Amino acid sequence: MRIFIPLLIGVYFGIILVKSQVASWFRIQRMFHFEEAHMYLVLASAIAVGAVAILVIKRLGVHTIDGNVAQLKEKGIHKGVIAGGMLFGMGWVITGACPGPIFAQIGNGEWAALATFSGALVGAYLYAIARPRLPH
Amino acid sequence: MEPLPQPWPWYISGPLIGLTVPALLILSGKTFGISSSFRHFCSILSPRSKLAYLKENDWRAESWNLLFVAGIMVGAYLGGHVMTDGKIPLLPSHYYTESGILKLLFGGVLVGFGTRYADGCTSGHSITGISNLRWPSLVATICFFAGGLFMLAITEFIPS
Image (tube, rainbow over all chains, first blue to last red; front, side, top):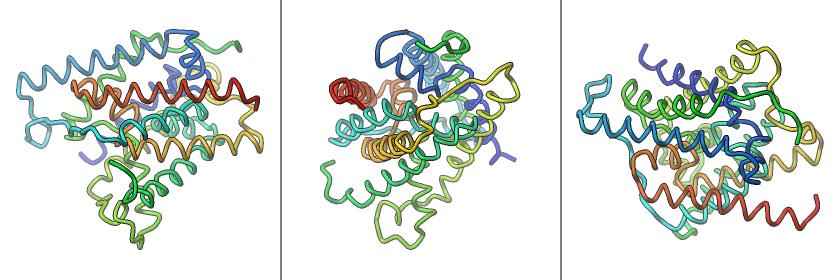
């Protein structure tokens, strides 16, 4: 049954993405135009709660359900974090969706988001092709 | 500005989103992130690919990620159609045109390429990474916003 836990947490996350309208193109536009603080406050409070939770988990040496020490994967810095990050930001403005919200938009019945998803797969495939030649 | 239905307030939405990180970590030992699913989908769709990035990707070992995004779709359906008293629009109607679909495709390519090149997106870098006090994730997040603002600056000068 444990393999279904990520599915359930996904359901939880999907509900919030829609209800908070983080998955809304309109909110993303208002965020980038600095017209409202909603998205910034959502992001900031999500990080604050996440940070406290991680701190507590580390301090108490909490174990995962499988009995391992709870540890997050850590990502390093390379040129792609900057270049790729900026390209993603450009796409984020156009589509009004970062990766989570793409799936939320599709689930919510916004079928045009299937175009965003298809594009994202093409983009990931192009990255797989270009990767050996790109600076990292 | 078009009128929109009221969202759940930030002080509820934000903390609930933040709790996804410890929930996934403790209940399934996984690190919250979404854009790696694009890589897994590509690996699945081209099983005989010779590209190292797809060939060396053990997507079966990471299949939790695919269940997670499937869950997001189910949750979004529930949030938008069951637990609701009205439709919550997530995309504007002008994207349901030929040029709109092309725009989404093009933007999607940037999202897919960019997040894979950057090793993560808003969930993996901005929420998980910064929560974990990883400075590379802060750099990534600043770049996400810099790219977005740059795109806006371009589109202000080029009428669509």
